Length: 350
Image 1 (spheres, rainbow, N blue to C red):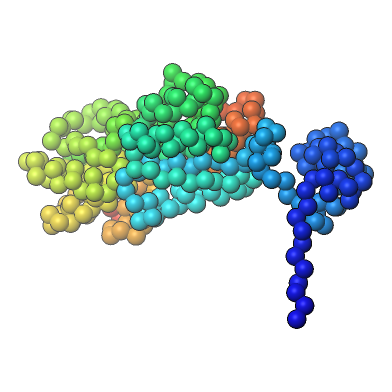
Image 2: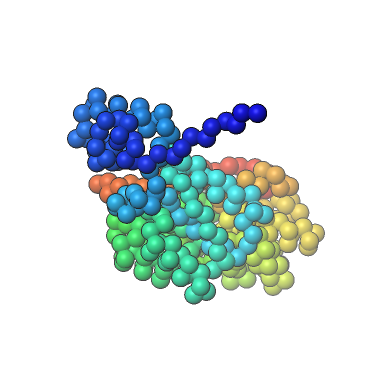
């Protein structure tokens, strides 16, 4: 039985010999230099394609070429694989990078308080395995980001804005800052005056801005801010459940509506209300923010101010790559607007 011959992997010197050019000409063709006659370029490319020649990445890096890879650093205590929304974030980042010709190296870490985790991320940057890093789940004032940007490393950060920092290598994407006020306007338009608020993690830029806009919305409508109807959660369903349980245990009177910092927190509110035998929206209405993919699947379906996360991550990834390429006029941040999606969780009252 005749064995199928395997194709020998050629090096650049052999490609040069077959094309009848110098090795430096092959290098100029591979690296896209313009000072190669078109006829010569075509001849070299023909030999390269016929022999499936790919230059080693290590050699290109020694020559100062980029890796074509983004690091994707997700900081989360919860299991990413168990959350549908988180899975879509991973897909959006990977697809956006692929559209722009980049690979993604994904790292999921529980926190940035562990020195080993911090050193792991720094090592990836300093070894130049990646051209830039995309971060999700970091606090707005994160020392690691400051250190990386001070070293000239490029970071793209989800939900992060520092007015005091305008380095061209610090890129961010953010939720619009007034979504909490929009939620208050909506429920007031539905006739609600007894309004409870469950805020999010106040280390996150979006949570701070939603808190501020919740309060400004209440003031705008002359609604009394009642301490027994204001609680803090994180950005997760269990934290929303815990905060709603505390609210129900400590309030003397039920609010007619609960405004949640995000949809995951709202799902926790659903659980607490159901456990207490309180109907939604018959006794208490609930409104969320984000546009979680589960919002239409819970019962009753959740009214929410939704964001286009595909647009979110394409904006972040594309502008981070523009920073890698030192593109002029590259916006350092973008604020993405929300769209109200009305469902059955908010009841209009007299």
